Amino acid sequence: NAGVTQTPKFQVLKTGQSMTLQCAQDMNHNSMYWYRQDPGMGLRLIYYSASEGTTDKGEVPNGYNVSRLNKREFSLRLESAAPSQTSVYFCAASYEQYFGPGTRLTVT
Amino acid sequence: QKEVEQNSGPLSVPEGAIASLNCTYSDRGSQSFFWYRQYSGKSPELIMFIYSNGDKEDGRFTAQLNKASQYVSLLIRDSQPSDSATYLCAVNDAGKSTFGDGTTLTVKP
Image (cartoon, rainbow over the protein chains, first blue to last red):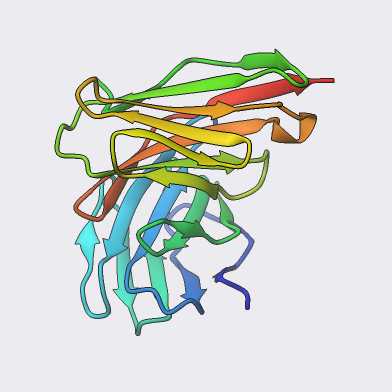
């Protein structure tokens, strides 16, 4: 039982490149979330999905898109990466927020 | 004004002491309140949640909620060096959580 998994663990992108961060949960929770965490700061909500087939913007959605592929999977896409998107990205599942291990993204 | 404010750290306590972590929030409609622990370089992990006014105890941890004062706290009794981490307060309204910036706790042997 892995809980919440994220891939990749690390990624370096050049400005303008695109990529998709993957998240999957095996806990059968309806809600899933994407956060970013910048150094010395708390978590800021990018997008969330209250249930399969629905997505909503959070506090900092600009520059990101999401897909809730099914109940298990919730992906985050950066269409044209910018240095300001350098951060650690966490996916979470459930109202209580069980977090994945994170993806450390650097945009040069 | 940030929606969720945590007491500025870092906080240092000796081993065996009580550590007190505080959090205030601005949205009176907030319904549920969470405390997470985050070790350096790791993801946050849920310690406790509280929905009703009063105290909730789980082992060495006690969460306290006062909705009238818009205040939630976490007490850690008999602090251990392994409790050294950043503690994040989160306030949830309608399924969306807002996090504070965290308070870093160091427990000195």
